[in-house]
Image (tube, rainbow, N blue to C red; front, side, top):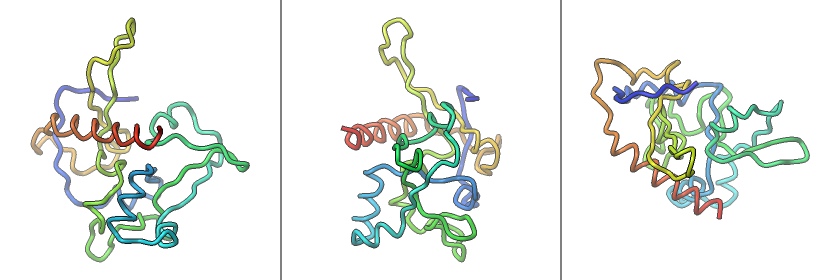
Length: 176
């Protein structure tokens, strides 16, 4: 269920809850992988250490598939995707427990950049022409993001729309 609103109030509290959520896997794009590899000056072998190859235990629902940044691939063991590796405690590989923050914030994957929001491209049902972008709060955002509060400032919609357009362009490069 997507919650659409005209106005959202958000300011990241840097609590790290999204980075420490055991049930959140950060789906990565080819561009995310290149940004991390090049930004951290990693070799191919070092890059493989930060990535997990996740195989679904059961076939994901259409709703679950719609939430993925990059669709899964079919393997002999079932549907799978690449994501950031997780530590034994379930936190993201790049979450610094001592500093209580993301150690690659400037290089973080697109999945992380847009949390707790996502955007949907709106289309005219008759012509299929794109006629806008709607911002919505993700279910995980609603369930635990401490940055969402009525006392926080309104988000800059132009920033989020611009970010989403940039991410969509990156995905076009990745897919084609």
